[in-house]
Amino acid sequence: MAGKLLLLFAICRLIVIVGLTLNPTVTDLFRVGIDGKLSVDPHDIKSASMDFGKTTRNEPTAVLHPATADDVAKLVKLAYQSPHGFSVSARGHGHSINGQSQTANGVVVQMSRSGRNPAVPEVCEKKMYVDVWGGELWIDVLKSTLEYGLAPKSWTDYLYLSVGGTLSNAGISGQAFNHGPQISNVHEMDVVTGKGQVLTCSNDKYPELFHSVLGGLGQFGIITRARIALEPSPQRVRWIRVLYSNFSAFTHDQEYLISLHNESQSEKFDYIEGFVIVDEGLINNWRSSFFSPKNPVKISSLGAGGNVLYCLEITKNYYDSSNPESIDQEVEGLLKKLNFIPASVFTTDLPYVDFLDRVHKAELKLRSKGLWEVPHPWLNLFVPKSRIADFDKGVFKGILGNKTSGPILIYPMNKNKWDEKSSVVTPDEDVFYLVALLRSALDNGEETLTLKHLSEENRKILKFCKESNIKVKQYLPHYTTQEEWMEHYGDKWQQIYRKKMEFDPRHILATGQRVFEPRFGSEVRSW
Ligand code: FAD
Image 1 (spheres, rainbow, N blue to C red):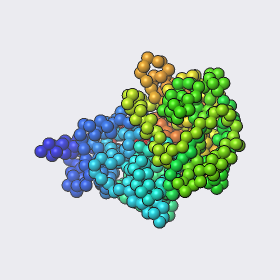
Image 2 (image 1 turned 45 degrees about the vertical axis):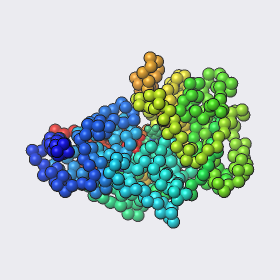
Image 3 (image 1 turned 90 degrees about the horizontal axis):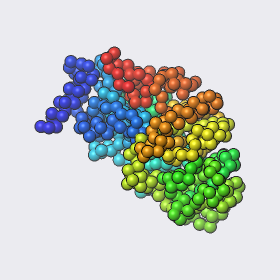
Image 4 (image 1 turned 180 degrees about the horizontal axis):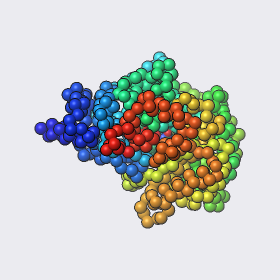
């Protein structure tokens, strides 16, 4: 009885939102039926209204927990065909920062598993790929491929993100210099377009849709299945960190190491990242727990004297069958060519899975201290190689002062590993850096750690780049006007616009990104 009442309430709310006296298509949806569940449970609504950023909140009317791609298609088709329309946003794990997977007064499609059991990962050992549901978390993709001794090639630092969510952005980590971002490692996808069609697309089939959706911020379709490239999984990882006080030595070495991408596996590292240390507090931070207690380090002992330090982070993967001595030699051979502070080599050795899942351990620690569920005013930028030294001077040694409230990652990538046809925009140089300011706002009385202060710093950084003509591109972009989006996409804008008109002409999908205004009746707005 309670279930029926809730359903009736959902229909009524949808009718009100869609603005119809009686919308036969809404009632049709319930008549046709879905295998999953359409929910107006306050708990579901609340969770779909928030994200990891904790700075933006938009309440949907209902949440769909789909069981199949058909469920998603039925909902989108309804939104597309109804005279007044309503917005539909896929939500992976809600790890966006600025409400990108939210939608006000529309329906959120909760893609991650919630008891509705969409298809489980299917590994093809022979062709080395896995087919996964769009809402699958990368940690679960890894678990299923490991059963066959295989693993995806390109990762994010954190694995509790959904496949559809990271493929809608790019999906990057220290393997990107070598394998490209995650979007360069997808063979095929099933996508529900903004017209409610389910299409299988790849380089050969519906290639326009395929390339648009990769890095497409959810604008062109909802990914319900992705076919991900695999490789034989290494079993162990040698994980090394070395420190620099000289920025140009640091970037020179990073750029040298990523230039080895075409070399054989024994002559290059498998993962190259780095981070900036502007205050000693960071040594105890979640990315830096590596240094202690086994390898305690004092910044002052390295003679940095309050200056900024840079940490290069590299790994060498190896197999049970590898000879440990030859791994030592390969690592030694590569380290010899670098110019880090001699006494600053920190090495550890661990199972491959533990390395990939390293941020989750830090998450559990932060959760136990109540420091995970806090606002995250993150800023991620792609900075052209030619201007990274100016960025260092102006931001790391300038705007940031000596308190950062979270890790600051910096690592270069090779542009030729990115497919120009995808929807992502990157700087116009062969090498560009990711600079990720991953900060947590705290309300502990320290002004420099407040959300207001950190947000203001982000604005200053963007202003500094603009005024210094450093042509950065935001990764996981956030803008509030279409003019800003047009500037972001630059030459790609016309193409993005044309594809939007083709695949989502009513601008139903992912309205939380605020790229396109929904084309609904004048009284309805879902931004
Ligand atoms: P959501 O935040 O739920 O969605 C993101 C966007 O994608 C929304 O617009 C949504 O509508 C759309 N979307 C979601 N699912 C689908 C789908 N199936 N089809 C079409 N569109 C969809 N990113 C990196 O690249 N590298 C990292 O190392 C990295 N580390 C991170 C660490 C942490 C702790 C966090 C919180 C985030 C990190 N990210 C990283 C960012 C992450 O890639 C983005 O947050 C991304 O949005 C994935 O999160 P999600 O799966 O929860 O997607």
